[in-house]
Image 1 (cartoon, rainbow, N blue to C red):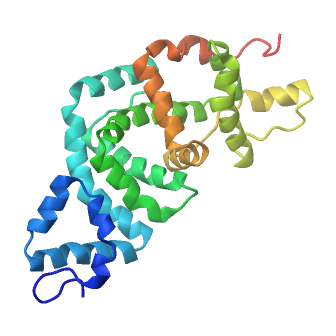
Image 2 (cartoon, rainbow, N blue to C red; image 1 turned 180 degrees about the vertical axis):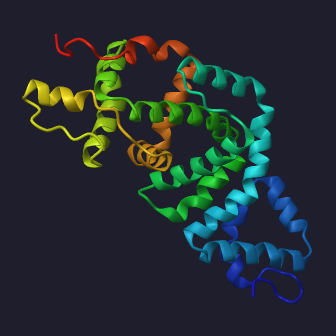
Image 3 (cartoon, one colour; image 1 turned 45 degrees about the vertical axis):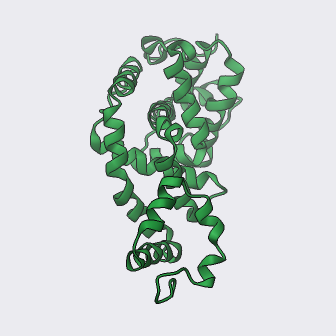
Length: 262
């Protein structure tokens, strides 16, 4: 089907020879060194991936890539420890163990694929970037930190959002990038429903309401609301400079006892 009896590539495969030209030299040399029957297995795998459903692709890629990627990330103890400390600073008690890293690696390339205009057939391309690009792999911890912070913010009341953005140096940018998208998602998903916004006490009721979200729904909302670039850049900005996000837990989460609009 793909190779002639003497092991040479057929005309159909030669038509896509440019694909092999895009391979890293090591991969190309490895492929060309394979005996013809082993090349058939590689090409058959490519064919099966192409015709498989997105869910099957995602499951296969998870099993095929995650172990190696997790081991690489676990070797990066310095960054892992820094991210763990940052999470503690924000009172987020997520443990960066192997299971979590594996889950986030899969989520990272699925999220990346969905960013491309919700085309689920891009799982493979996203996974390959994660496997082949050192820069993309380095973004995993940035992504984890940014995602965990956005999960925390999704669970805040709008009053707590106000307290958080008041702490920031560039309040308008922070509101535009993070607060408005989260509150819009709250509205359209019926999580926080403002009624009679012009009436003070009616507004007070929804303004102090704490969103109630399952873990699954929380992850879905963050993925639907923010691109991987936004999530990754958010985490990277904090790893680069912790004071890029001003945070005072006691101020933000203190019980609301006084009038909220003074």
